Image 1: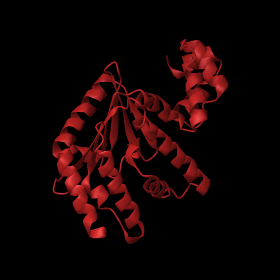
Image 2 (image 1 turned 60 degrees about the horizontal axis):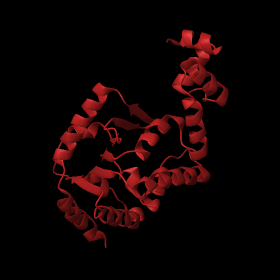
Image 3 (image 1 turned 180 degrees about the horizontal axis):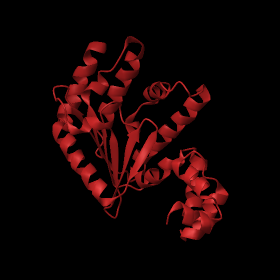
Length: 245
């Protein structure tokens, strides 16, 4: 159904439909309700909107967030930062504060959301998390943030001892590889289906098409094969922080 047809059925103009789709007009409750009726979703859009409002998460992130909360396995790769699910509060705040457009209140709201996401790893039956991080991420430090990064690396080492969490470093000696094109995370549900999320400067892109997921899973295997074992990664992390202590 194109924008004109959808607009005709929902009694909205095609230009307004386009504005909602590209994000220049917020998705409000009347629009979500009418979309549910026309597409016969059983109230899915209204429910997602309510969840977004309750969690104060951006609407584009909700479909992936739902998959993450119900995942049995998570695989994430990060070439530039410690993954959000593994960040300490101080590290996360430092990362969020790099966005000069955010007020202090905005920083704290985003920080609260990020910390809330991590509860998925604290539940009674948590998913398996396999994280691959470029070693250079842990060496990106200045004098001002040295204590923050030391705490973060120790936190990673502690998490890596949990039976459901594995942390693997891609050593600095590895040159160009496919993972350098950008970070991503994959979530596998109880039914075995995968959902992915690509992180961008402006938010994220949900990946749920079979072909795209197949490509992303293949890339995951490539970057995972470049990484050290879990035990080797912990030893490397000890070496990283040793000069700072």
